[in-house]
Image (cartoon, rainbow, N blue to C red; front, side, top):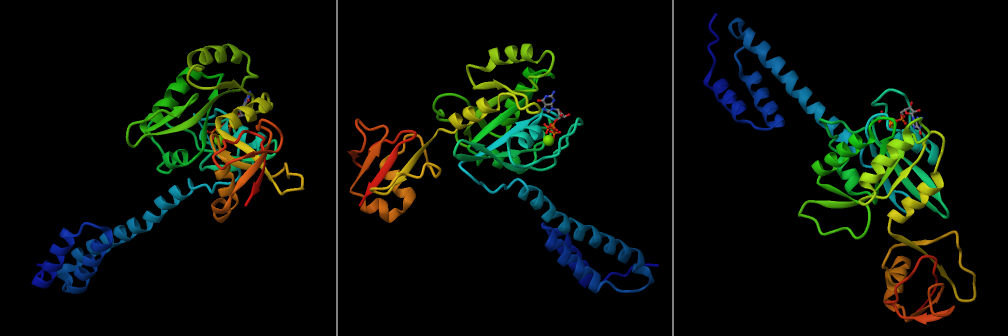
Length: 328
Ligand SMILES: Nc1nc2c(ncn2[C@@H]2O[C@H](COP(=O)(O)OP(=O)(O)OP(=O)(O)O)[C@@H](O)[C@H]2O)c(=O)[nH]1
Ligand SMILES: [Mg+2]
């Protein structure tokens, strides 16, 4: 039976063909469904329109799911710094998170155990540093939220499995970083980079150093990369070299801890003010309050001064462990 479609319907169909977004397509399709003559001859077409509509609605439903996956990579920063773990499947990232922080992440001897980033807090002296476990790197796919997680972090730990060709793993990780326009920077200043690129402080961990031939593998990979990155053998499972690891992470962060005190009182050494290396008294005052910084007249410094309690100006560069009395 002929369909005998009306000009009204054909116009709606044209609108549908011209629509570029899913909501636009749905709107046009709704119109087509409303104006199509309802008789035996259009039965088949009406069926097709219905299933097209179902598909479009499904597409619309899927979108927030993509957003959700990215959302999972939005890890709220806590503590003095955020440090991301990155490695191939089974390298031991979740073991490290579970054994060095207060959090736990599923550990298994099969690959792709971890499905989304999981944060945990690692205590180092009087600081808490956030570590973020991540799903493993895959050769042909990068999760959409992953580059931003690394870009927004303060440092990166590359976790290598010493029992499984760590040189190859290192090459893969560096390639992946480069695809994300991220340059791992181990030592020295972060160099000026091309537009769109970002440098992230990077430490390499040779994990599973408890394995039989692990230390030989470590020597080989260390020899190749130690001029570029700090590198350390660890055992996430046995907790080997964790003290060293924490120290290295702290050094990587390029931060200093100072303590403020009120005149006539002792400083609270459990509450450091954390600032970037190279900060001044001005930055310390700013960390208290911006009005405080504006009114600052001078400060007294215990620690790095020529003598204890030396009077200094606002541009005085602070050093690790300084105790500072701000005067307004
Ligand atoms: N011998 C040894 N085995 C380890 C060590 N760390 C982890 N493993 C083992 O390696 C396997 C993988 O550990 P996971 O911590 O799940 O590795 P992962 O990198 O999180 O793995 P994915 O989530 O799949 O990326 C498990 O069987 C762990 O017990 C280690 O230091 N020494
Ligand atoms: Mg894991």
